[in-house]
Image 1 (cartoon, rainbow, N blue to C red):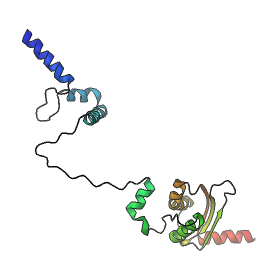
Image 2: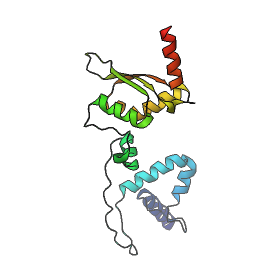
Image 3: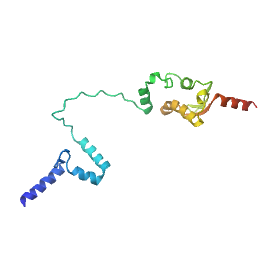
Image 4: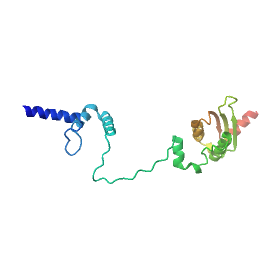
Length: 188
């Protein structure tokens, strides 16, 4: 009787210390399978991650010391990550913060769309925020619905919107044929 009680106490102590008897071949305590069945995979994963973070790292005898990994460049936003991945220095539509905002946007629109007509007006007034009205006529808009034209131009100007350099914009994007019809209609 004494021997059985002592074994039961040893098992309880081992479980409380997270040592426990190991499952053969897996290296995991037996209670992990019971926890997986009871808690579900997501809860068990959270438990495993927490346990691994609490444990100090232990090197094995067979493992060779590794060199420290080089530190990665810290990039702040998704737009900056895209620019870094695409080599922003060579992209003509990448923002140039050395230029005044309107000149920079004009340069980028000309590089991206080769417009036959481009008019950019600051409608911000004296509120301090830059709000632009852009009227652009380009052959590159042929065959594209109005919403896709707008999305394309917004994607070119997204870095300015995200950084707060540009607060808002109004877009009128036409093909040369649409612009010609509009001008003829206005002259009547």
